[in-house]
Image 1 (spheres, rainbow, N blue to C red):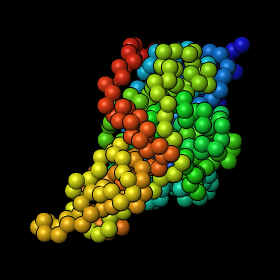
Image 2: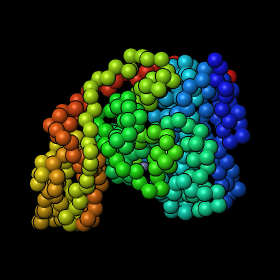
Image 3: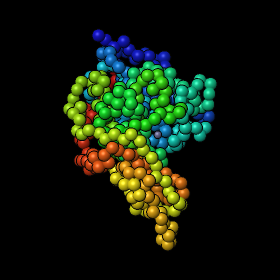
Image 4: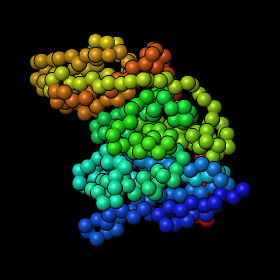
Length: 348
Ligand SMILES: [Zn+2]
């Protein structure tokens, strides 16, 4: 059977073709046209449609690199079904190295949007109608916000079996059960019955090599799980991920300079000291104590903190000891070899 082709923004992509389609977005006030570029990889044979997107928050660029590497993989020549790769969703924020849109709205709080709404609402609406509604499942790649770093993990609704299967297939050490946020892309996908997972890894405006390799590997594993790619070496599960049912932030008890901060992957018992806040003279010191037991999966990298600021994102696990071990193994393993991208397949 032949792939029937797919139509995105008025462009039909036929079986076996790959092409870039521009979703037309509001032009810049300089008169320059703007578009969300979508790489459409159409397999020769029919199968599911998966979207993989990044930079919904314009400064979270790790996912841009993950999608770039993904698209260079020769294995995509064997694709069944359709891959819609959108490396930069918030094109305006990306240009300005900003999380937000020029109207200072957060795109990931603006879904499903509307054709006549705010700038963010229009962009959200375009993405939902042209990408989400044409997909069977999706992956959205994020990182910590500016000056914040996340341990590579998957956020998903782990009460849904299909979503859980995708989360496990991604093969990173931590899965975090997370409720959907109002106005988020994930909420829209879920409401349409489209299983979607979120990959969180690294820091805004930075590339993280370990997170990037784990991310490329994760997307390929999902393509294999969906039988869009033949089973391969990568499908072997190296280790079972650990599952966090909830997470919480440890906040700064007062303003000052944060020192001796717990690193990503650190295990904290309740009342453990996760860092010390001091003044520039070193005269006064106060301890930042964790109010829960768990493992640090996110933290601030900026040591200048205000009272009440979120410092450590602590996930709670049934067995924190196992979680610590699994995470440490992930962090200290030699980097997995990068698959040889070889020649980029020619345009058809
Ligand atoms: Zn984000």
